[in-house]
Length: 453
Ligand code: S3P
Image (cartoon, rainbow, N blue to C red; front, side):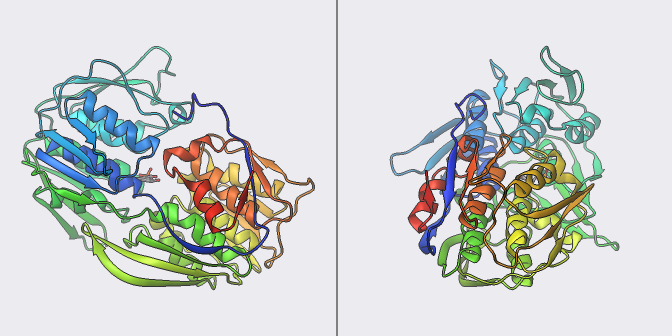
């Protein structure tokens, strides 16, 4: 796990343009869900393109600990022999979730309606993140949560969870736009009699809905008069094993895409990128800023829309980012802030309180790091305001400034890209967390022409 790994500092710079065609690893959200639903289905699920990052491996380990067989074959496909909904076994040791909020919150949903008890632990970053948002609805369904020694006694890990079977079906209106909370309730609903219903006032990523249907669950989505999505799942479901092809992760593609936009003379193609509208907000916002991003070869892979992205260096303009677009790019704000730092004029972002409870406080950590790199940035309660350089390379007071990634993979990769667009490069104190979501990141960037040392 990244918490235990020794820090791996690295400096990034770009002496010239970035060129080439690359593919990013599989989508993290879809990979987690494929392992979980495969473990709850009957029969053998085969997953191609699974993200082999630490977060997803934590999910695989947890599903094994609860009785599923999860194996990788020599060709790189993953085979999951599920136990059937309701068939999970009591894990014999604590489930170590590493850095992964998605593993934690979704698996809490899975465990909540099984007659088992599980303890969830995580690294320093994960142990600071709020769990009340899942404790509350899962508690209404009958699950019980207990603080464990070493925890803070509140809603932080480590936590012990005792599931209830049969659990109580609920209708739950999401108080916060969170696909993790939505998914936790739906996954708990799988082994619950009757209809479990989630109402989401603002649409969040819909991979759970798509994949639950794909596995044969009886799930419907309606739109209410006020535009809210009403998702209804019939419980005590029989899930059937299936073959899944995981598309490339748009949240990972974001880094080479923005790097190509910022480094003069660049022309980069990223193949096989998921462009599900609930995930692709960054590409829309970059286009609003003047980015040259062409979607080529649009197609469907495993029930998800996919395209190749051809990206050429572009002069970006600052904009006011519409707050309603935030859920479709919630993980992409750190790299958008880097793009904004190189744009002409002011970029204003608001409505981003959720960024404070990600792997780090992404508003504070990005504001601090960008300032070190020489960007003009001010931090508001719920967003950043950035005065761009108009394309001029970033230059702070120090030669090659060092920024702290705070155990946050996306912060580390964002500052690697900032380094490519800076006068003397940027040093990141620890690139180790990148392994949670994007193994091979540094190799890919250097293949395109970046220098990492
Ligand atoms: C995810 C949902 C988002 C996102 C996370 C992955 C998911 O979290 O930030 O990286 O796979 O459901 P929230 O639900 O907290 O917004």
